[in-house]
Image 1 (cartoon, rainbow, N blue to C red):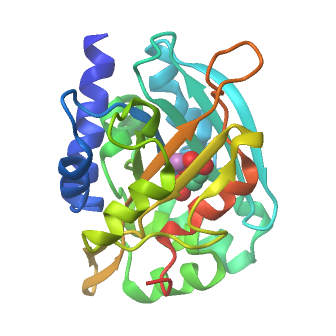
Image 2: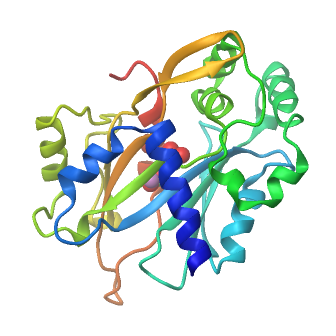
Length: 267
Ligand code: OOG
Ligand code: NI
């Protein structure tokens, strides 16, 4: 238990310091008497053996998480799984991987050269999950990757870390609707991801979600520092299934649009 709490603590520190500094402000806006409960966090990777989804899942599985849902994103060429812990207060973990082999040979070769720089030992300590980039990258290569896949560019630039945490709206007393949370955020100067509508999902699919547009953060490249999209914050409302328990899965059509919270040019 201690270890898993420490792992999420490290992920949160990295997320708020490096990827999404505005998260602290969002947290302040929404926190009531109790600390906010996280519905889930999300991690991204490349599907190459050294760093694939299974490698990111391993530390969570060692801490009691179980694989639950599998998701396919054909247009974005991504595959994802989600993991749950028997303790329902612990966040679900959504891990996606880029299907590198489906891209141009230039992207494939570029990504392999990045991943080849990751020391194998790094992958044996769970700290890698919030360790950022284990490869050198110049800005032109970032742009080249992002032109073919925004996800590839984002991941190459930032490396490993939680790209979002997700406030569980079910737990809030002041707000019951995703649209109310969006309203509060807009009122406080945040931009909401409008791709697929400001609220993704509906009661029929038992999950409604929204997210902020990723913060612009400064990233050091080998040839200078550039501001690019970092992490975002998500909000989720879950509905009960026939057995009376809250739905625990994800919805492909909604997730497809949540990925776009880190796309440039939406703000
Ligand atoms: C994950 C996007 C999907 C959700 O809740 O459906 C997702 C990502 O952007 O890495 O988080
Ligand atoms: Ni999410």
